[in-house]
Length: 206
Image (tube, rainbow, N blue to C red):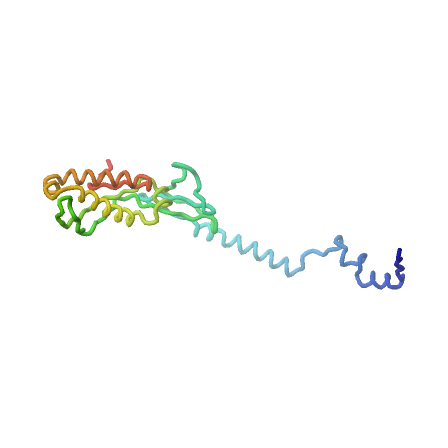
């Protein structure tokens, strides 16, 4: 078996240059922060203390009386059920972590432009309509639909064509109320998962 003989003088030189037993490997003799580092640290603390009221003020959000909001924390809905809906009033969000989404609860009017529709007896008619939209579930309307008003308009156009296509011209002229009820029923059922109520007549809350 080969043997290795170390020269004592070489070992002394290695230790003097910071070898295995030198100061480079001596963690107990590690020095603390330098004066410049301490000054920078204290400056950062003072800067945060001075600006903390301003930072808190900028993170205040006001939710109006006709609005409701939901809070997304790390992209996930905070809370469940009714507890997930916040407002009206003042709420505080955490910077870089929270995001606030708002829903307008006021009644909206959606105008359907004139449509050329073929009736069941092969008569082409021009039909327009007005539907009324109100958000009933803010969380669902914000998370399940990107644009509630636009989606309701497209759905109303499609539903209007389908309903009129099953009616004759005489039925349309004499049974307008039945067409309105049928349109409202279909729209209300289709938009319920969106947290939205759509009807052909305005509804006044008492």
